[in-house]
Length: 279
Image (cartoon, rainbow, N blue to C red; front, side, top):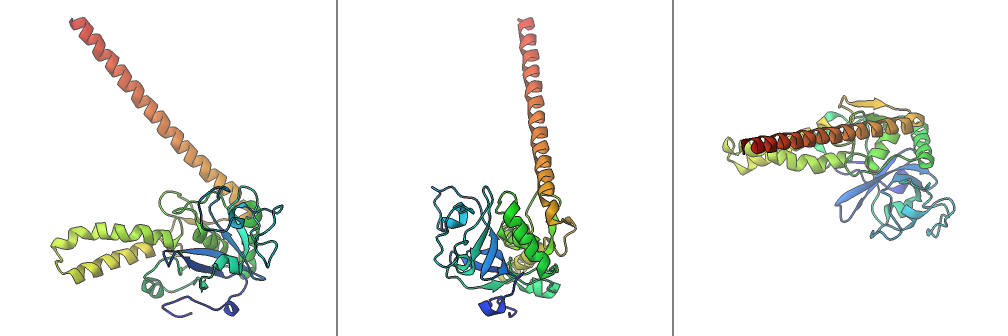
């Protein structure tokens, strides 16, 4: 792999590698864990049978009791019911796209030199057997609900490689790809007041690019402080606790809204009473 591109040949990848490929003319990338035997475990949003998607139905609707549409591997497309974690063959994962390998343990300078997010991290990877164990365990037990900004395919692969999860579910997840989507417009907004101090278009472009790159670096799982190591066997309990906290927050917000409505109603009644007395 070079400094510019992470593209590799199939003969170069090994079990436990975090691989990815680009979709929709490089608009976004899809990530997974290569587990050997031409098989990849990856995470996709669940789809109904009638959903409009260009992804083969076996990625979303297959289970151990459903036959695979893959002509080579009968178990391609295996997934548990109500889970987005899928086992597919390398060909179906790539869908005629090129193969890339995600970099771990890169230096800050290398990380900052990668303009596009979702290609590397400063965090180090665990051993290949631990990575494969996490991927296969999640294939059987799921990885929670898919969320494009907080719990996507790159987040899944990053967890399999590092075991790191974010404590605070607000904001973006571990995904460098999601951070890039949010970081670019944010950098443009933050740098806009500097136009008065830096009228040069070139200077503004450099300033915006610098803010964008630093925002990516600040949210990288290798440097952020709001991540913890969670054993894969404890992951369902962790996700459940995070879900209950979000539900509690929603309930608190609903209670606050109800109290405000009651106060407004009470105030209105008092005002009406005063008007009646005045009359």
